[in-house]
Amino acid sequence: MKKIAWLVAGAMAGGVLTLSMQALADKEASPLPLGELRTFAEVFSLIKQSYVEPVTDKKLIDEAIKGMLTGLDPHSDYMDPEEFKELREGTQGEFGGLGIEIGAEDGLVKVVSPIEDTPAQKAGIKSGDLIIKIDDTPVRGLSLNDAVKKMRGKPGSKVTLTIARKNEAKPLVFTLARAVIKTKSVKYKMLEPDYGYVRIAQFQEHTAEDLAAGLQKLYKDNKQPLKGLVLDLRDDPGGLLNGAVGVAAAFLPKDKLVVYTEGRTPDAKMRLTATLQNYAGAGGSDPLAKLPADARNVPMVVLVNGGSASASEIVAGALQDQKRAVLVGTQTFGKGSVQSILPLGSQGGIKLTTARYFTPSGRSIQAKGIVPDVVVEDATLTAADQALRVREADLENHLANPNGDDKPAKAAKPAPKLVPPPSPQEKGKDAPAPDDGSQFGPRDPSPKNDYQLSQALNVLKVQQILQKRAN
Image (cartoon, rainbow, N blue to C red; front, side, top):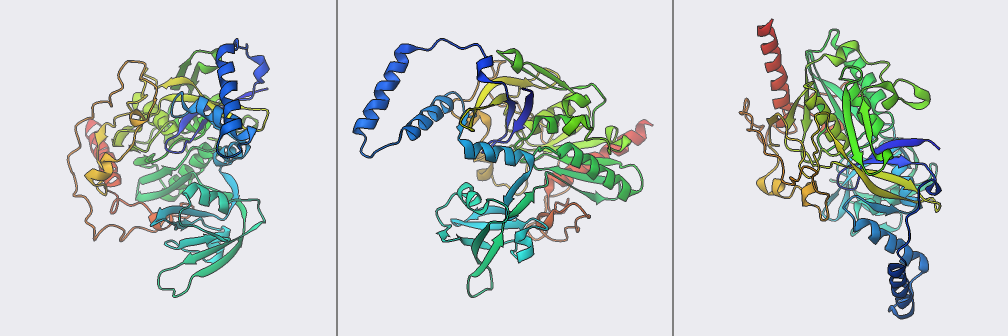
């Protein structure tokens, strides 16, 4: 069977993943350590006989497999059939649900934004609503993941949400029918005339295609070639490998190297270039067919931060190494290992670290991250917020950097403050309405309320001035 390459987001930061559909029988079997397996059998028997409560064989075996994998590194893991299905749904960008972006607040689930044209938006659920019950289950004490699982389900099935809303005396009750929700990984808008903005939230199956369509619309709306483009990869945890290569290929000359990987097996050694075969869609189609020709030449800034991981770091590293874009923001997460998703006969699968990846110049960013060319801190974060930011190097059992340097890369000199950070009174005000198709909603990004974005726009304008002087 064919081998399909994936780059998939993890719980905290994305992981470079390959989905291998080869039968395990095709692999050369390793001799079994009989002494250690006897010990395992003894422990299994003792637990079954003496643990304070009865434990099923399935639970013991599942937990043993989990321990075997999670003890290797932070990104290897076991997925039961339900978790394996969720992995596929997340990377395809489709699932059965209600269409709500959520966050946590005071132990409850807060609606960040209803997605346009979904059951939640049509029913009248609003940003800021607090979900206090899902069917008959109180939300307080549930994790966000558990809340998401309860709201997702088979399209057509129903779920009841009890919601507390500001200025409403009584809780509101909504009964909604789940539908197929298609999440948008690419959003876009014009920041101002001649300067475009594209945000990628996660690399999915149609990300490269959606990027090409978004750029086409930006060029059409601007009625002339753009003078600059901001590609925002902040807090993007990863996604599909062909999506990441496709995004890089949208801005690089054909056949330029995007990323390569090194591992113990031949399958783990890849060189991926900006070539159609490395990012082709279904049936070999070209997802960049609608890409404006000028996209490969437009001056670019890529925004990154500590939440930019895996696929985001591959794209940022490729564009930086190939001198195609200026990176602005803060040091990235440092996720430089490759995980293979290996399906099991039980319909579940394992996620196993099989390689490290490298940027075109040969840099390993494992436990180091990528340092932007222009360092600009997020003006909304306090020193305490920044201290709490977790990176790969902070994770227990993280892989060592192959260059023998696990210390974060030395940061470049921070950029001068060309404009003052927005005041609290300015934040959230006067944000321009999103263009048709952008669907940013209430969190519409604007240089007026986003200091890093304002600096990215300034960098693009400085590039224009320098280019004019050079000519």
